[in-house]
Image (cartoon, rainbow, N blue to C red):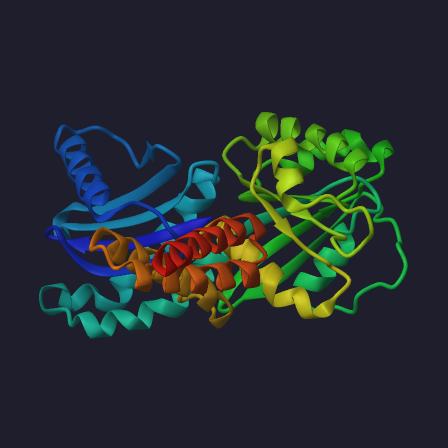
Length: 343
């Protein structure tokens, strides 16, 4: 997934756009200096791996320009380089005659180009799980299609396009029948995120360990989480039980309820760490992060009452996002602080 875009001239940032959480300012500055040092040595590099990120860059030495994309480390470098060269060409054709007097405000004309770039790089979200757990229903929920009332097995797989705000994602729904398991390895390759769908029964949750091993082998850098579907059915394991068994972040879901589309979109955004200004649907994520920072500050300053209030608001937002475990954690914290205050 494309996470950050930079265009720099003489060490000054002309253009920057963030699609998701990526390098801190400190890490970026350090990395940028390393790239410049390698360039001065004559090192012929155009990409750089930095922890879980891949940095692809292109220089115009005579104009002291640097164009840079920061993506997830598993992204296809060749495809990223092609898109980066397109941006460089468009930038030089538009601004090349006036590089010394660029108005930063004019850089906004690049926004539609970058949005198209994000789409062309095809962020891949894969939904995996055994037959009947609700993968196709979840796909239709995300895509706002009609929810199927009966289970119709998906044959081999289906690729859909989903839009979150201005961002486009490719959603892969794999066939869950075990006779198609020989295809799963190839389908899962190159995934930016993998959602393992379970029907929240103990048998299915235990079986789903198979997909965790599959992901470790064929998509080790993918953002991965569990969707505990069918939480409305009697005997469904709680998300806490599922998370304890599978050791992966787990979200609750009832995919047949069309009202849960926003919740599912927010779960995807949470997993991919998408920048919160990409869509109005992401507002609860933004609010949650803000409140956590405020609560931490209040706690450090000894304002217990305000901290408890923030914790309660955070727990409500976590419940809205489907993160039941984090909801429980902050709800219990709020309750304990209120009890302490009332003593």
